[in-house]
Image (cartoon, rainbow, N blue to C red):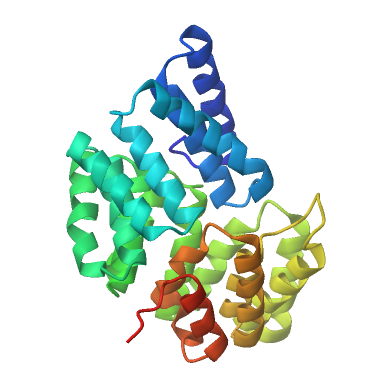
Length: 304
C-alpha cells in the first residue's frame, strides 16, 4: 500500500481480504481496506458515491471490534478531515489515536496535516518530524513532511523531502504531483515540465497535448493544453478527470479565473483535496473574491 500506485493498492487490498478470510475479526485488516479506498478516492481513482460505503463500512467494523485501536481512530480522523471537512471532529479522533499510541507515526503525520489545514502550521512541524523519526523508510512520511514544509514556506526543504519520496518509491503519485507544484513555485520550469511528462505518461493523448502546447506557447501553453483536454473528458466514464486536477493545470497555466471555476466544481464534488487550499501553491488566487468565498464556505478562512 505504501507504494501508492494503482497496482500496489490492488495487491494490498488482496492481502487485506486474505487476512479477513483467515480471521474475519481482524480489526487492522478492516482498517487497511478502508485506507486503500481512502487513498483511491484521494487520487481520483474512484468517485465519491462509490468510495464512501467502501470506506465507512470496514471502518465502522474495525471500531466495533476494537475501539482502542489507534489505527482505526487515525483513519476515522482522516475521514472526518478529507471527506467530511469536519476539522473539530477530526482533531478529536487524532488526539484520541495519540493518547492510545503516542509513538504511532501515522497518527503524528496525519495530525500534522490537520494542523496545517487549520492554519496551525508551526505546531504541525514537530509532529511531522517525529513521524519521520518513528518510521524513516515510509515514502508517505516524507510526503507529509514535505507538505508541512510547504505550508511553512520552506520551499527548498520541501523539494528535498519530495525528492526523497521518489528515491524510496519513484512512481509515488502524490510525490510526483507535489514535487511538480513546488518546482513551479520556485520557477524551475524545465524540471517541472519533466515531472509532468512522467505524471501524464499513462495517456498518449495527454502527453501529446502537453508537448503540442509547449511547442506553441511554452510552459504555460503546455498546461493550458492539458487542462483543455481534461475539460473535454470531464464527466466521461472512461476518461473523467477530477475537477481539482483540472484546476491545478489551469493554475499552472496562469489561467486564474478558470482555475477558480474548476475549484468551485471541485467543491460541488466534495473533492478530498480541497482542504489543501491553504497551501502557498494557491497564493496567486488569494486576492480573488471567489477564492475567498470558497475558503469561507469550507471554514478555512479566519474571520476577524
